[in-house]
Image (cartoon, rainbow, N blue to C red):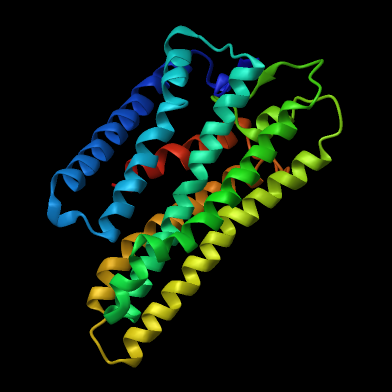
Length: 276
């Protein structure tokens, strides 16, 4: 296959190397620094900071799976990728990408226990109990993304081989198939609504309970706002970018191809820079 994202820019396409390489360096540096600080400071070895370090590891890994190849494509016009390489890249990107919202669910649970049940916080957050919240979401992510990629790998590709994207995004590849893609579309939509959307609903419900609890108990809401508002910002930005990227391939509304590629790229790269 040929990855042909932003081809509409023509001779200006190589200049994309500058902003994307800057975002890549910022993402690597900021997340590496965050992980180093949390690992090196024993006072930060608590559940909340371990979850933040986990988020930084995800944000550190995601760009590595597609940005270097994309930058080489901008500079040297290296656009080729095999079907196996495409499927492996797709699996890594989507699998690690799901944990951006899943980790925010676990962070919301951590804040719920800390603010609403502070006396029992450490009982709830010991690994043997918290693992009951970890395993179901990990299994969901593994099953949905593996199914998504396996179904894409079984499609017949016979006519077109140009992927209008900078990396192997699920729907960008499925569009090229010459057989029926109804099942792929349905599973793709299921993945969107069972992972980021469901996570967002759960997180929203958690914060509604947190804020109502703070107001009812007449305690100052400053601490709750201070610890939760950054989570809400990250969730909102991530969800808007993710839904715009996913739905732009399924709702034909005249959105330019370059805009779809931009939103798909930003939904992975922007949170990696923004979260730290």
